[in-house]
Structures are given as structure tokens and as C-alpha cells.
Amino acid sequence: MAKRGRAVNIEILPTAKADLNDIYQYIAKNSVKYAKIEKQLIIEAIDQLYSFPNSGAPFNYKNIEARRLIFKNYTIIYRYKTEDLFEILTIRHHSRLLSNNPALKDEE
Image 1 (spheres, rainbow, N blue to C red):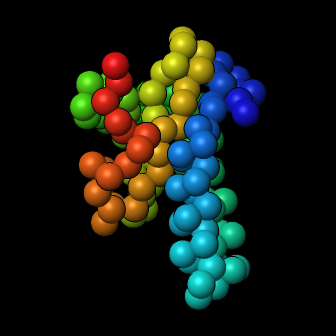
Image 2: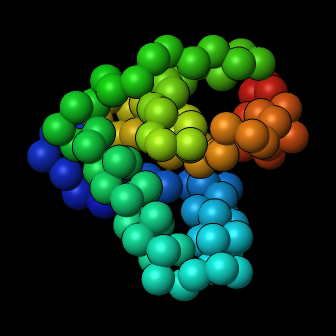
């Protein structure tokens, strides 16, 4: 579902939602409180795209043109779907390989 912003909409794709849930579940093994906080902070980092839509560096991987936003130990990969719609493709911890990520498969 897309969220309404000032100049852009942001859609968190199912793969990225699953990534966020995985992050939450991993942290919640030790602390539900801190898992909730971390999840909220990641969402707030994504929300900065409403105000700063070109945040992060260009990210070109397997013919996918996107941008990479770094937040703490996480890489948030997003791209423009249309002029006013961003897609959040994935949210990855820096220690995880991008090559295993289904959101970054070759586009045909």
C-alpha cells in the first residue's frame, strides 16, 4: 500500500515488508521493546524520502537502477517507479549478502 506524502508516495514492497519483519523478529528474540524501537526508526528513515527524495547514493546492481539509503547497520534500497512513486525494494543488514535477495533479481 502506498503512503501519501508531500510530493511523492512510498510503497514498501512485500519483500521489504518481510525484511522489516525479519529484523523485528531477530531483535525481539532478546527484547521486544528494542525490536519495536528499531522497526520504528527504520520506518522513520524511510519517511525521510518524503522530504529528501534523492537521499542516498545511486545503486546499480544487476540492471536495477535504484538508490541506496544507509541507516545504522541497514541498507534500504529504493527506486522511482514513476515520477511521484518510490518503491522500497529491500531493507538489508550490512552483514547479509545482496546476491541472495529476491528483490534484486535481474529484470527482464
